[in-house]
Length: 308
Image (cartoon, rainbow, N blue to C red):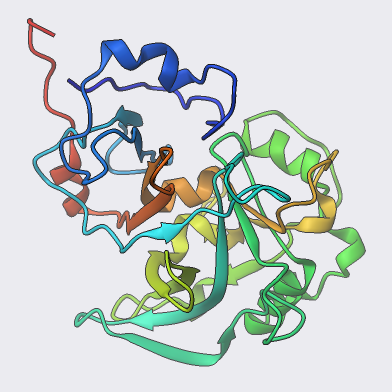
């Protein structure tokens, strides 16, 4: 049995004394078929942008509902709560590397000059690279130094705007939700069309901490729609608008246990599997890229039968 939703559930608490969403419905769904951790629930996400060739947005519980299965990454570790290594309060992962690369028809990644993004102040200190995976955030937030690096990486007049004139996060969130916002401020950065190549498009190379010490899981995701996307309301735009926001603009931040937020636009670019832990197993995340085009039709949900 698989239950799907057209909206996204609230953030899942992995292990607490309170009854979670999954605890409340566990008698209504079957256990996982594909996971070796058969008693551990799992959430599968397939979320798309309004401009996607496939309009379906869904979350499946415990079992992937399609014949076509993503090429899931190896297991990415979830970071435990601060002060208690046995509890997991959020879907936090450790980012150990992030770069802009090019990929051709052979799908081999090619580095570009200055493509490595400064996820930390020091290459030897990854203590401030905890990433919160959050479907409830309409925006993604990264350290301000990454925004500055992206402006320099993609030189154009729009990227010379002083940092103090960047649109506040609240206004950006209202804009993405369709609310009219009057502002003289600008986007954090743009990606000019001139740097895009149909033969070797830009991709993002993510490196996450695996399940064992020293293990790194490398995953590739499309630049569009995580890093940037075209504004559908502006014809013949010379660039794609940046979708990463300076972390300093995050409104009402109270939790200091994470340093970045990968929000809804990250889920638009990736298939995401969130595997819960049990008393004997640790939670983990699996990812695969969502590439736009005819291939997306292979991930179309089957029709609901009368029995269901």
